[in-house]
Amino acid sequence: QVQLVESGGGSVQAGGSLRLSCAASGATYMRTCMGWFRQAPGKEREGVARIYTPAGTTYYADSVKGRATISQDNAKNTLYLQMNSLKPDNTSLYYCAATNRGCNWPNMKTRDFDYWGQGTQVTVSS
Image (cartoon, rainbow, N blue to C red; front, side):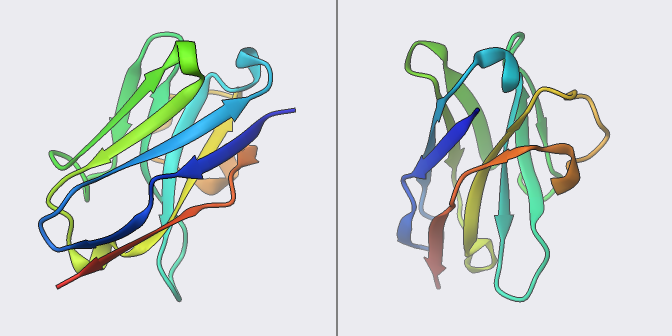
């Protein structure tokens, strides 16, 4: 079983930065694809970025390209999301997710991921 625990959320002003962390446990072969999603109040959960952990291949949603970096520390079993130039509409609950059913889809859908963390809140004020 895979367990994911996010941390690093908080309140920042527009233009600021945050680095989210996701501590993962469980067999690594069960989480060869790991990603970040976010969900704002009243909106659907949307994919932000993902990484194919064996190769480090990454994907970013158009909305975050150039402003976000997903990375991993295999020794610490930790996934990161560095977000820069944050905007108020980036305010969301950010979730870490994992699967081993693939990692090369043209986009990111919640149905493609099997394991989820509880989320960490990011609030961006203007």
